[in-house]
Image (cartoon, rainbow, N blue to C red; front, side, top):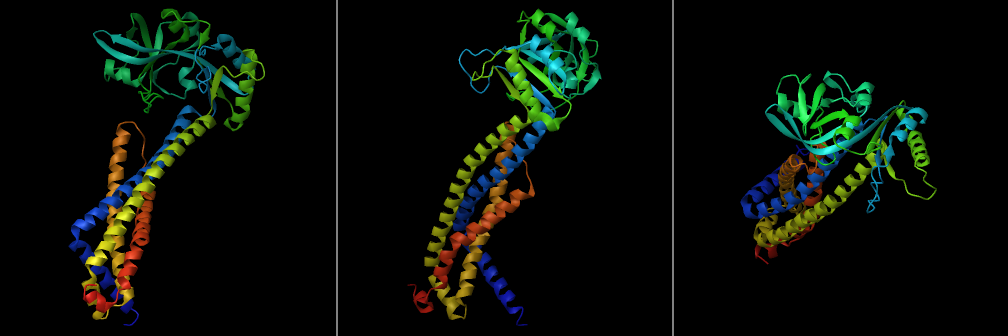
Length: 413
């Protein structure tokens, strides 16, 4: 029986702590709310970091571990008047023939914000992409129906195209778009392929599936664009483990083709899976720093609210403490009771904070601000943080209550 006595005493003390929390409801509400705000911030940090890491993996997988994307102009410098049409057909042909490890080179250019019509129906299309043969293969984008663009389509400037899932559904519903003719600003385009649904968003937050792909020559001819230069190149390599070496060779060859002297900045930008991961990691780090400061401040505020209210509680409950000591309660039991009250309140605040953080995170996700990923880490970290807050900020008031002289306490001193 002596072995179970400490357990029974502790259980009784915890039971009294629960009753005390229920008695002082308004004070408990203040503590729970203050702690909940801090835990909500912590929940957002963990969920947002997990979500950012998952999004980074999705972006790299979608981009392709064995691919590089070259843009005209240096997107990092953003110099005034900088040329962005610096990639030429000669560049593409030289890369195709001379770049070690490369087996596919696809030039691309785009025209934005056009009207796509089919009979009496029309949709606003964010982008029409001009590309060469094997566009779907270059982007690892399977076709749900039909065929990819061919070299013959490009050579002839054929009025054919691949349609994305979003405009196809808007214009044709569940019917097949193959063989149907749509109009882009009065230019007829026969649909020869339907891109499978991919999901996700573009860099500007648009729908990735909301596009039409036509031969690059058709785009430049029909929309009176520069026919020598284009905006981007997609290059695929045989072995992704040599991507660093491939990127260096690609950079050296392009600098040579553009007659850039040593010390001159690049007039192009090379994006590889590694550079994308670095960029996303930088964004994640900024997010963690911002939310980390917010969470730390909110948690500290919650802790100070708890400590101050518990000091007030100790002052108001001196006669209760004196009576318990007079009836045989030890100082340790008094301290355990107040610590238990503190931990109960902070754990309740943790539950509220997790629910609040998840709700805010879901709202931000639906608005496209960030993506959150819920995992067991969210609950574990929140409960641990709540436990630390409860013990750390409740310890001094609990010690003060435990150190009271029973006679002075009974007098209300």
